[in-house]
Image (cartoon, rainbow, N blue to C red; front, side, top):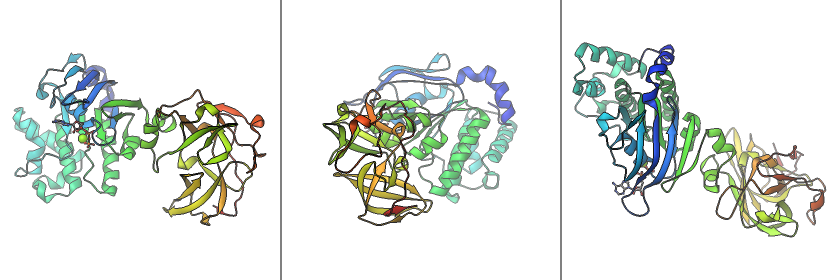
Length: 410
Ligand SMILES: Nc1ncnc2c1ncn2[C@@H]1O[C@H](COP(=O)(O)OP(=O)(O)OP(=O)(O)O)[C@@H](O)[C@H]1O
Ligand SMILES: [Mg+2]
């Protein structure tokens, strides 16, 4: 790896690329039942920034530690480049790791912390000094090299940990929730810094987080885990636009995707407690309808699902409305500060291509059809025959309804 800049990245890719590929083949880690990591496989391309995302205890750190060699896999194979490293000790795997806790030596200066690994590898002093200067400049720590870790802010300590990983010039860097101890502003800054650094150095990064904002903003690819298994592996866009399950749908996005229960009725599946307006074909009954808060339109039109405004939360750029539909509550995100009358009735609609259907087990069902709202819709009946049907994954025309509303106006 070269620390001198972006143009070096390409030339270096040709020869060094092979070392940067990481493959897991049905890797399991079992302490008890169920296993902490349960037969997962993935293949990380050279230079990719991959996020391991999931709730606490789903096996993210264990997966990372197995790749690093800090934990032995119970079964399966781990390959780095063309080498099977499953049984190799950590030092022979050619990777560096940034821990959540920073793991800095308190009695050593910033400079000595950064070059610690080089010193134990017996890298000559002049070369150590040269690499230290380069890296300190890269992470903006030149002014702090003589301090002890205790004299640094959290963000500066984080950068020392990062510098220590970068100076090793390993082509692969594993990071376990490296930003979790920072405040929101610093976290945003560090997100950009890490991403820029990774691109500049052409590193392959596997980055563990339970923060979906980090996942969406930093990852080329997101691997979402639940209970030791991979539930979805795709680009941030794919996870947002086509969640594979109700769990994936609820994990990405803030506020989370609305998931409302559907029941089968005569003219189609309806939202539980709101029997008048079928929203999907009958077979979708018993499952869930998913709509992101930002896709819901709130209006006073003749079509759509009847709702009532419960309350609002003003966030500055936008406002989150809580709406009662049948016996369930939905959230809608509206731009700005709409004038809201609590308790006022309104209608909700959404573009069909932005609604998702999941079955009773939470699995995505693209084979089921959503139903479009029509202007002939009345609160007392419906004309299912005139409805346009659409498969969940197959967008129809434009079903958006936008009319003015006495109860809610932007
Ligand atoms: N050394 C261990 N011995 C026994 N069980 C362990 C050990 N380390 C982890 N586990 C268990 O394995 C599961 C996965 O743990 P892991 O640390 O990988 O989760 P995680 O996804 O990183 O969670 P978090 O977001 O809280 O860090 C958990 O149920 C945990 O209790
Ligand atoms: Mg962890």
